[in-house]
Each structure stands twice: as structure tokens, then as C-alpha cells.
Length: 246
Ligand code: FPP
Image (cartoon, rainbow, N blue to C red; front, side, top):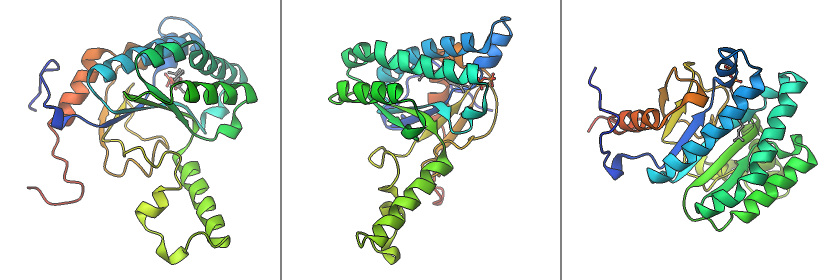
């Protein structure tokens, strides 16, 4: 297999506009150190902040991070509340840093599942970074691809009922407008850490033509070289999007 060295310069036209990441392996990272899972999640937040910087340096336009899935609610109450606390803390304490870096933060997912305090922190972080014109950082919190599609279908059905939309006129593009962040381009590249080869209900609609890249590296250990390797692999892919080879 031909390998591109991670440090290779990638032509800007071959860079993904939108990178989405499934941040897996925090629990295992903690377990190998004999620590509790939340220690891994804390290290995971540090990794998030590093990845944001590397994506800015690489001129990536959009970075979506799968922070908490609709299925993650099944974890122990201790782990769920710890994760919620960590996300709230990050939103409250890192917003200044994101602003300074011209990052616009957005959240997708079922917000009404979250505590009122966390919903307020999200709204404040979104408001305070709304004029960021650099990287768009999209956190998927209480997010599920199926839930997003079901919610979009429900809202479309209500519009039909209220005479605001026509059932027969629904196209892919018209349906997209009912998703959480319709203006965000589809992910070009999905990176998954810790070795599992699955999408786990992440951006199911949006990932129709995404390139997938999986690394055995655990999320807290994800390095700049790993990101560069993923970007180099992406640049070498032949994206036909269902068309024929040129
Ligand atoms: C998967 O690892 C990771 C999660 C379910 C949570 C990801 C959350 C963070 C990185 C921290 C919070 C994020 C933000 C944006 C503030 P796992 O626990 O499933 O690991 P395992 O498969 O090794 O058990």
C-alpha cells in the first residue's frame, strides 16, 4: 500500500472542508492507567482543545465532534453526570479562548434532554462566539442521527399539515432544511479513534459520501501527526460520489 508521509504538504484543494470526529477510547485510556473513566474524559477534553488548534492551522472550515450520543444516556449516572459537568465547564471556561481564536461554536442534538443550566451555557457560548469567522466547531451533544432525521420528518409533517410545505415537492435538498444545521456542508472526512469501524448513529444523513478513516489510537492520545496522516490519506482518495472514475 502506498503511504503518504504525515508531514507531506497537502494541496489546499485536496483538504476536507468539514472533518467530523468520533472521539472514542477515553474509557480504555483511563483503564490502562488504572484510573476511573472520567479521568479519560477529562483527558479527552484536553485533546479536543488541541484538535481545534490543529484544524485551525490546517484551514479546516468545520469540525464536528461527537461529544455525547443519544445512546450514551445508558451509561452509569456517575459517568453521565461527570460528562455533563465536563461539557458545561468547557463551554463556560473556554469560550474566551475560542473567541480569541475566531472560532464559532455551535451545538447540534436534542437540547431539551439537557439540564436547564447546560442549555444556558450552550446558548451563551453560541451567542458569545457567533461572530467568529474562522473554524466552526460543532459539538454533537445528546445527538443521534436517527433522532435528527425523525425530528426533521416530524417538523416537515407539521409544515405540511399547516399548509407551509407540500408533501409531493419534498426533495433531498428541501428535507435538509429540517436538519439541525442545514447550512453546514456535509462532512468530507470522518475520523474515528480507538479502532472501531462503525458510524454509531453519527450524522447518518450527512455522511452519505464521507470518507472514513479509523485509527487504533485512543482519543486522548490523538496527535497532530495522526490528524496529518488522516488528511494525507483523504487527499489521496478518489472521491467519485457515485459517479464514474475520471
Ligand atoms: C467515547 O469514549 C467518548 C465519549 C462517550 C465522550 C466523549 C467526550 C469527550 C471527549 C469529553 C467531552 C467533550 C467536549 C467537547 C467537552 P468511551 O468512553 O466510549 O471509551 P471506551 O470505548 O474506551 O470505553
